[in-house]
Image 1: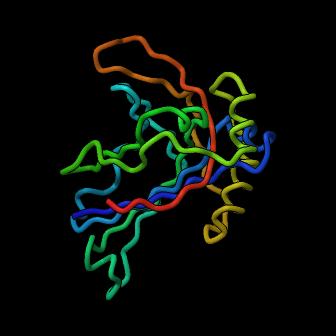
Image 2 (image 1 turned 90 degrees about the vertical axis):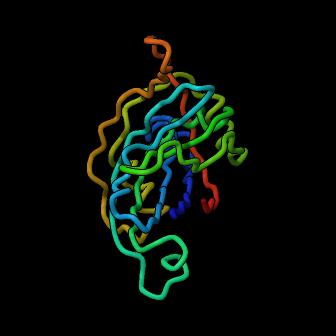
Image 3 (image 1 turned 180 degrees about the horizontal axis):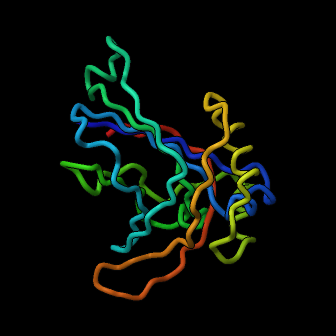
Amino acid sequence: MRGAGYDLAWPRSAEEYRAIGNSAVVLVSVVTRDVRELPLRRIYLDAKGQEAPLNTLRCHRSEVAEGSPIRAVFGQYREDCFFLVPGAALLREGALRADFAANRTGFSLIDLPIEPPGDVRRFIEQTSGSGRPVDQKALNAMIEREYPAIGHPLARPRVPKPRLRSPSASASKSLPRTAGRAGAVPS
């Protein structure tokens, strides 16, 4: 048994959107009974059979508190990970999926598209291209604002250009980028 939830943080302005690489920040939390399933092997966008792995910013493992209903249902082992998600990819049909270290691949986290707030949609629609460099200071400030319990900057991420990969094709295509805030999805 395993469960997952997420929170998607949209940038506050067009400037912040560009500063964080035309992306959004997603926090994914997973809980499982089997410690061998952690750490997550990867989280990726899946659109029309093509996969684009997401850039991991930081992961933290912990245990769910004794007596918690979450622990009773899903288990005691927890992992929280932050990722950058291309903004424009969130506006297209597809899904955000996770592969666990053991026992489960293709675990559905978020069904796409997600409708961002009106201002954010305008940032996305007015911004062309992908693979913008990430301003680490802006990214840290956004994460500290949206997730104050962290209380410290994240380690510097490696930010490759997002690529779509088709298992049957060797050619890659760039994904556009976007950002936003959503709720939790139990699985």
